[in-house]
Image (cartoon, rainbow, N blue to C red; front, side, top):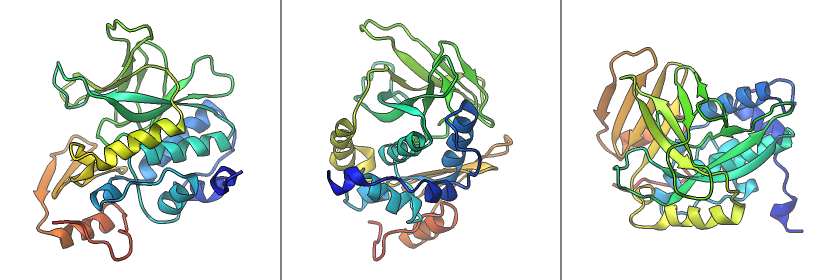
Length: 278
């Protein structure tokens, strides 16, 4: 048995990191509560790829970075860590992979690169779609039951699952979010074909190193607080209040201000000695 295979998540440290305490049972209520705590507690960020490093998905490294290191991560890191925590709590977890449709044109066919999961909770007839690693304002704050037409008010957001027309042999599911204009906007589409950790090792490498991948060369950071959604794309900082107030957007002056904003608004500490390019 390898050192990594023998590594067990420090569940106490993880739950302390996301600020969650409660009865540790694999119920739907616990799933919803832990999911929201993770989504609000650990930011989304792609600092490592921007610095030229492929993030490790080894559980010991995820624990060192996201739990103990004051950092966030992108979808493979968030959802790998979350899956390990759910399994430690007694949930049954199946990893899935989705095509991101947010921002795509009507004829665009993107590769399946986004990691998410199905989770079975004790006593529930249907599994739940869970995803704490989608770096967008329309990301799930709580899991949603895998039922066609299911709607979720995971305040301040709304989501639903639909099954769009599809010619493939497997049922296609699409996660949508309700926009401020009252329209349903597609976030991503997926089937329930299981994916395994080695699949995501390959996808993770591609996303972190491919010159055409936006995550390889531009900084993307997201954080949801109780009051607003914060987003940093390159040097553009956007703050969107949950109460419908005016969105604020401004350009940060330089790398030093970016690092100050990362530490202050996003609670992200850069690796010792690291400096962001540009």
